[in-house]
Image 1 (cartoon, rainbow, N blue to C red):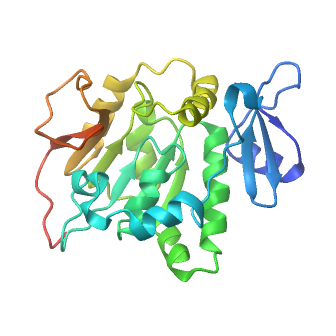
Image 2: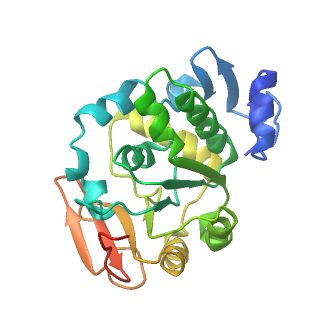
Length: 255
């Protein structure tokens, strides 16, 4: 989908990630640079408040301090244990929330995002985090690198181009989504408007299994069927969500 940009800064980021310019009449979404950073928005009655990526404050700061460290579901699924810190490809990066958690726990993370407008938000969020007054945030952001591309078709090429050691590949397919709050529903409408039908999870899993050297982890709503394909080796779950874990070989402390 084409997206309107409202200023030169937004235009520069949008063009860097191949975002097609739209007209006011044809495009319901827009990008704008504000004092707090780049935002993506539309009619708030439909899409809610504009979306941005903030790794410095807000929910990211709270989760970094009080989220539970390596005891968090995503950390356990990705194999972050005492003495083991794998490098991780977040092949469906979205707004980078899981990637930031993993990086905050010491992992190097490659964020791959196929939607150019979302990649622009990530780029802006990472740039602000790397210049943050908080040295811990800047150090975390330095472990994160961003690539824009379609993981279902080009994951191997993207990983090779970034010279990244893909020990673990993390997947969070868009649909079905596990959260049901009004805020999340509206946020998901932005992704749906940009992506359209998202029915390629089996191909995404296949690509991830081809690339990961050690394991693939897939976030699923609790009770949802596994993605079509090989059965997961084991499952890690909590109250409302779970991870299906596909293991090629064990992560070792020396790695």
